[in-house]
Each structure stands twice: as structure tokens, then as C-alpha cells.
Amino acid sequence: WTHAYQGIWDLVQKKYPATAPRNLGKSGYYGRIGTYLESATVTRALDAEGGTLDFFRSYNATWYDQSKYFGGITMVNTSLLKPCTETRSMIHEVMQTYADFTGDHDGVEIVEGKVQGRCWDRYFWLPPSCRHDRSKCILFATGGAGWHLAATMQKATVWNMPIAPVVAK
Image 1 (cartoon, rainbow, N blue to C red):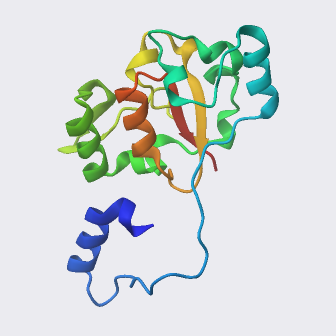
Image 2 (tube, rainbow, N blue to C red; image 1 turned 180 degrees about the horizontal axis):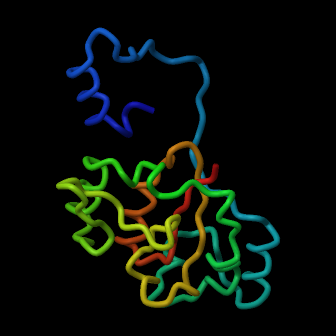
């Protein structure tokens, strides 16, 4: 996993050489990262319009409204979510990279001189494609402190996808 956070890994190695974790190599387990969609949701979209939910370009908010196949962000029980302040969206380097890469400076804010993800209603980061109409946001849940949170934010912004990532407890 260290390849996804190389800058942070290098910083920890440099600042804390005596106590920094060491990469001991491969464990013999090879996994893949993917997105899970319920088959009933995929089928509903296919049956209704011949639409596909399993291709990222099908989520471009300029051309498609896939939100009708998902529950809105107002339907989620926020007691099951971590507030943004407990996620990777608070890591300055990660959010600075996001802002630099995407140019989306409205998706971040500067607090005490540090860049962090802008949070709506304590739990939600919203991409540009649905900030003006939250009912169009599609919830995307991840775990830990926000596995692949920054990558999801970047994809949502660059590809104009109304994907609102949250972190489950």
C-alpha cells in the first residue's frame, strides 16, 4: 500500500527513522481494489434505460443523471460515518495535491495554514458536479481513515462524476 502514499511514507521514514515502520516485502497475498455495486441497482438502470453503471464515463453529470438509481446522501445514517475531521481529508499534503492536480480550490479550505478537504454537514465532501444540487450526489462509502479517498475525489472532479465519498466507522 505504500506506493499510494509515497510522499507520506518518505516523510515518516525521514522524520522518525528509529520508530518508522519498515516495508518487509510481499506477504504472498495479491489483491485488487474495486468498487462494489449491488446487482439489483445495476439491473434497474439497465432495464429502465439500457444504461450502464459499471463504466466510469456513464457517471459524467453533463450527460447522465445516475443519481436516480441510488439513495441520496440525505438517506444515510450519519452515526455510521466518521466525521471528516477523522479522515484523510484532513491531511495537508494529500489535500494540497488534490487541489493542485484538479484546480478545485472550492473543494478544500485552509485552516491554520494547512489545506484540508472542505466538509459539508460534518461528513460529506462534495464534488463540483453536485455541490449546487446535493440531491444529485451519489454516496461512495470507504473505510479505514479513507482508503483511496483522495483518488476518488480526483476522479469525481476530473471526470465530472457526482460521487460523494464518505468514510464508514
